[in-house]
Amino acid sequence: MNNTYHPSARRLDLQYMVLQAGFWAMFGSICAYQAALLLSRGFTNSQVGLSIAVRCLAGIIAQPILGLYSDRHPEVPLKRIVALSLGLSFLVGLPLIFLPLGLGGTLAVFAFMGAFELSAYPLMDSMAIQFINDGVPIRYSLGRGVGSLAYALCCAALGALTARFGVELVLWVHAALVLVETVLVSTYPTHIPSPETREKPEAEQPHAPLTLLATHPRFTVTLVSALFGILGVIALSNFLVNIITSRGGGNTELGLGLFLMGFFELPTAILFPRLMRRFGSSRLMTMSMFFCALKCAALLLAPNMALLLAAQSLQMLGYGLFTPTSVFFVNENVPAADRIQGQTLMMVASNGLGGVLGSYLAGMALDLGGVNAMLILCLVSCLISTLLALLAQRLPKEI
Image (tube, rainbow, N blue to C red):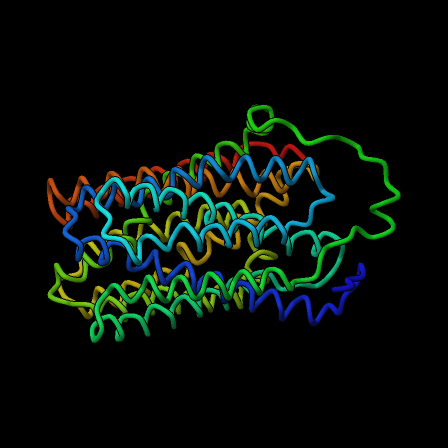
C-alpha cells in the first residue's frame, strides 16, 4: 500500500473509528464474559479473579517493553507492532477453545493473551495521536465513543446468544474478532512525519520510565490515582455477572447491563471536546474518579434489577470520561519524546496494575464476604483515587 504523509483526513478519521469499534468489540467479547466463562467451567471466584489478574499482569510486563521500543525505533510503524501482537494473541487463544484446560493451562493462555492484546491498545491510541500532533483533525474521543457503542452492541448480542447456545460461544466470537481487528490495523495508513517535523533536530531522547516518573510528579500522582480508580471500577464489569445474579438476574440481564455500560460512554465521547475546553484534562480526571466512586455506591445501595441497571448511567462521567481524558492528559503532561511511553505507563497503572489488584482482591472479597463486600472495597478504592486526583491538580505542570 503506497501511503503518503497526508492521506485524506476524512479517511483517517473514519478508519480510526472502525479500528476502535473492532478493538472494543473484540475486547468486550472476552473480557465482559470471562468471569461467566470460567465460573461455568467450575472455577471459584478467587480462581477467576486470579486468572483475570494474571491476564492484566502480563499486559503490565509487555506494555512498557513495547512502548519503550516504539519510542526508540520510530522507523518501525506502530501498526506493524500492533498487528503482530494481535496475530500472536489469536494463535495462543486457540487452546482455550479446543483443549480441556485446567487452572494452570488457563492461566498460561490468559497470560499470553493479556500480554499481546492489552499491550496493543496504547500503541493503537498512539497511531491516532501521531496524526493529531501533526495537525490532522482525527476525532479521537468520538472514535473512542464508537468503540464503546461497539462494545455495548457486542455484549448485548452475546448476552442473548449465550443464553441460547452457552457461554463457550464467546471464545469463537473473540477469535473471529481478533482476526478482523488484525486486518483493520494492517490497512490503516502509516504515519510519516511532516516535513517540518523531519527537519527539526531531536531536542531530547526518550527517558527511562523511572526517570520520567521521578521528574514529573503531577503525572506520577495521577498514575497512582488511576491505579486506585481502576482497581475500584474494574470489578464492576469483570464481576458484573455476580452483581446481576445477586439481584436475581441471568445471562440476558448481564448482556443488557453490559450494553448499558458501553452505551452510556457514547454521549461523553460526543461532548468530550467541549468538556476538555471547559474543564481541562486534570479536572476531568478528578471528575471521572468521583463518578466511579458514585457508581460503586449506587450499585451497593441498589435493591433490585431496575435500579442496578439505572446505575449504569453513571458510566457516562465515570470510566467513560476517564478513557479519553487519560489519553489527552498524557499528551499534555509528558514531553513529546516520551508520549508513547507515557500512554503505555498510563495503561500499565490503570488497566494493568489496577486491573491486576482489582480483579484479584475483588475475587477474594466475593468468596469471603459476597457481592456487598466487593462493592465496599471498590467504593473505598475509588474515593482514594478521587483524593489523589485532587492532589495532582495542585501540583505544577512540568511541561
